[in-house]
Length: 178
Image: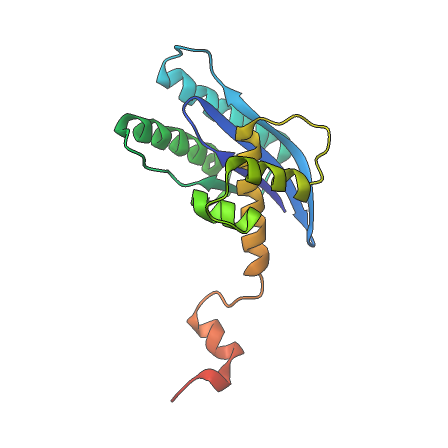
């Protein structure tokens, strides 16, 4: 499975692509879509959309994992983040990708074991898990790879789990109280 992780932002949008096959994780590519200072929001959103479409076309990921919006005190920042998330999701859905969302705390806990981990800890663990030694990486790309790894770990955790109550009952008849 190929997973595209997205760390959305209106100033920089990080992206990271990994393959996850039979428990083996491999870095395929990572980077960030950046913008010139003063570029109108509409043009930034277009750049996110076209940039992600190119990566989706090039790597043919199966699924997209994206970080949920973090709401701080600045309403305008939250709105802009929402726009960037929306454009990234539309870029994925237009290419037929399933979309999964993870909170920043969930990503940190999944990658480092600590939901309150610092960005540096996440970046260190991303590089360790993916065996990245001499490749420079922006914080946005490291975060995007962390999101992709989180998704891979979640898929692995739930691979044998029942999808609904009916499946659970079939697999666990002794646990049903009549």
